Length: 280
Image (tube, helix red, strand yellow):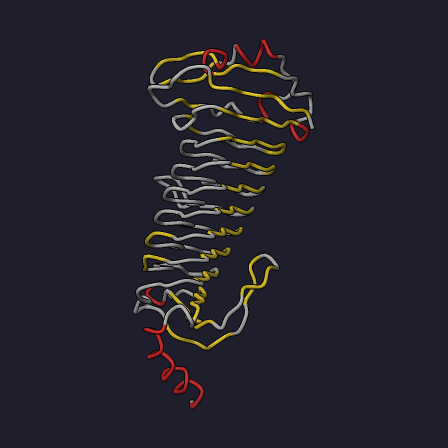
């Protein structure tokens, strides 16, 4: 895999749309052609070479292209948009819409990511070593097409509405998550290793949410179904036991919400309803 390096060469004062900073686009182009690529800096058109110092030969095959980005890119948006192979490594923090509509390949971030990470993603892998903002794997504003495939792994915390309108794939959050994970969820899996601020699975109609840490409550539109032992996320065993809830019944939903028993003693009152179900 051939590596092409992009190093930020100035302090960025306004957002930069770098949707062409992607293996699909730079494959087969010379350094000169890459430098002359037009992008948006705020409301002005500029050249990629005025933002980044570019070094390397990407080669002709997008699947064999590796992009390494260094420097302050916390204002650079839409890196890896519609990516269909290859690899991107970002050393530092990065702005919103990373991996937007991604189809294949690997994106690794050695830092934090802003909102709408992997929005509309259908394949590939995104791993963030730090934290992520709101709407991970969610639909963009104005549509109902969230993540349909692939995997997103957040090693730190994530914000609100993770997996909004999610229809497939896997989201793993090894830290805490904000409110409304899995809202409007149709399919796929969300795993939260630490704590959730609440209202998990609101208006979900399918899919699976696993909360291994604390959550303040379960929405009243969910029914307790059973106590389960271990469960799995992409073939990885997650130790239980868990309370298993179904919902959201306000939407005639059949989603599955697993909530770890040891982390949530306040939910023990639900056990009597399990006994009643078994009695029937």
